[in-house]
Length: 573
Image (cartoon, rainbow, N blue to C red):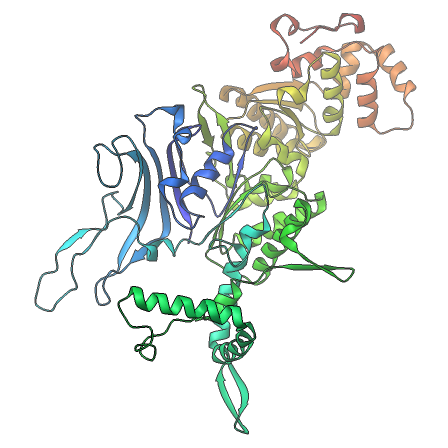
């Protein structure tokens, strides 16, 4: 079971947003962009005991406008199904819709203007699903009617599990209808009911269902509870219940009886809690600190992954919370494995929970010109050759591009280390501006990275060397054609800066051979890239024209002209 389309209208910061989540779908973006509102909208109608009007308030309506309806519409693949009569047809329900609206007139259920929640099952044309109005009978045409609301049998087919930022273990225990452990224990309970045990009865070995054996022994344990106070309470409930039903508590006691009991093994599982033993002291794990509770929830999730359970929809806020970087990488890999048989929609601020090779799984959430929440994914097709090419360059630092407002794409470490130093001396705060400097691991990587970044509509500056060792002396014609391809990126609103011949040669030309040689001699015994960073940070080195060309998008207009800037003339951004 998976959500194939989400439509949200008039919910909090979301005026109208529609997107198609992937099996593993990352929602990234700045704080207050509305990522949590997307997840919260799904949580309000799915991962709760029941979707009711009490799940919403007036404050949830976009712009606090009383004339607007909140609409949360979800498509499912495969579709949900419903059969309202035993021998009737099974109908497909590809779409469900929840609408928070208002009563138009006074009624027994509410006064005019009060909030009300409408629920609808829709077909592929978004019309109400039609079901038999009565049990089918041979020889008679069966009348049909619209299916009212969303039946519980349909909701039970949507096993949604929400893991919020507060990481409350109690929300994931078997007692919680949408708890992670409940889903695991449901499978344990099913296995219990399918298991046969060999027991001794009247001196003979016999096989009995494990479930029956469990209940027999549990009833023996319950006899211990039958102390005087327990029996007195049970008798009072029995007597008053019979009286209220019109029976004589004495004369009818053999015909009718009420008692406290357990009907099913899962009643016992729902009472289970996680306990923690330390130094001989037993503690309820749900009372432990947030970090410990989070570790337990992650452990339960990992158990879910190892047991290869399938069909659930997970809604997770910031899976990176409370996790060490290595555990973040490990947990992300667990998410990827779980998403093979389940769906996971999550928000994140961590570069460890997105990856360039799987760029189609990312949705960038942002505020549009009207101040509402918007989201965009890549418009580029994710082909296997492209994915494998990008996988070789996998790096959490490169994953940062999904979080950037501007990407400065460079060829290697020399530019990656030097340009931020020049930016700092130009009083350009790259972090404040949301600019990421991403090196592509060699000139041949430019086009792939540039196309991905452009497909997300992220502004980009491409800085490349005219001559690169990637091509070699015998492939200059090929490199010339590649350079032309890079220049064509400018037609797609990218800035393109060509450093003739390379960054080192351009810097040497900009500041002069004598000064460049002097600065190089000042920093012996280091790599070319580190020397470039040290020279860029050196107060004696004037800021070269190449730095201003590369950083022009972040400079004020008056400072974006070409030419050297002396150390004492450093402009202010």
